[in-house]
Amino acid sequence: MQRAATIAPPIGFVLVVAVWNRSLGGLIAVLVALVLVAAVLAAVHHAEVVAHKVGEPYGSLVLAVSVTVIEVALIVALMASGGAKAETLARDTVFSALIITTAGIVGFSLLSSTFRGPVPVVYFNSEGAGAALSTIAALAALTLVLPTFTTSAPGPTFTAGQLAFAAIASLTLYLLFVFVQTVRHRDYFIHEAGDEDEHAEPPATATAVMSLILLLVSLVAVVGLAKTLSPNIESAVIGAGLPIAFVGVVIAMVVLLPEGIAAVRAARIGRVQTSLNLAFGSAMASIGLTIPTIAIAQIWLPVQLVLGLGPLQITLLVIALFTAALTVIPGRATLLQAGVHVAIFAAFLAVSVAP
Image 1 (cartoon, one colour):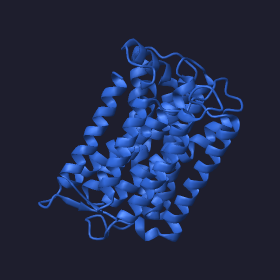
Image 2 (tube, one colour):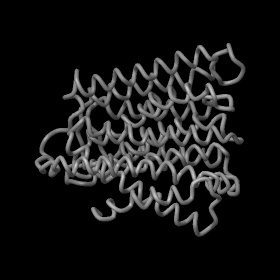
Image 3 (cartoon, helix red, strand yellow):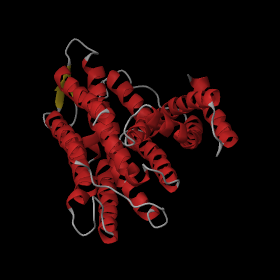
Image 4 (cartoon, rainbow, N blue to C red):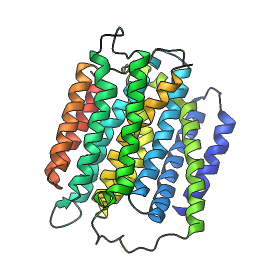
């Protein structure tokens, strides 16, 4: 794994240079997809090395911000190219990221953790998880739900002033949460001691620096390869008869793959708090960083930005957030809670394919 994680990022970067702005045929597209997966796995490995060096909760922030950089870059690039899905791409991707993290990643992490021992009950800090979830709920309401009901602009859109307010509020809430997570109440976001990885020696500084460099290279490779593959993805979605909004689902699943793998791995060794930090931190960054960036990019983007969710999406969002709240309030979870989260994630996939 170490050797593969070392060579995959530079190979991915070279491949990005080789295929940039070129149409991909069948075999080339498959090769690009394989290297893309390898770059994602490499990003997971190097992010975990960096996270182990800096410790929690800073480690979770490293990966959350990293995947959000990928998401923002892909959304801006695809919106700039125009097309049928461009107006709603940011909304569909951010919404998908919210459900994937709060239902999918949380559900599979709890599922992984509740199977690891004879007593299938896992514990975590409800203060930290609850604070993160309340911030996510506020961000989602301000940026994805309010545009559906405002009347100053036609359709589920914001006026320029409303969009500016939503962007500033989103960024402010995200930065406030980061301050609380890393300074004011850092102890709320640290997992309980005693798991098998607790006393492992952190990597040397040189190793961590090299992993940070390779992580950045991996992210560039993932963004570039995913952007190059995007026409193939769109053609495959349309060819399969799926809604164009499913492109946003695919993008969110690609960029959140590193986060999901890291969260499930952490849960498997008992670091459930770390898993929740990763899941909720990524959901928060997906809104708190993506919406302000898209708001700025809207100045020169050739399409109108549609952020308001439809009734079906709002219903799924409410169910996912309400269920997550019931899970985190007690500070413990069982196999049942894991199954409920996975079921909501499955419902999201089902209605994404056939709304």
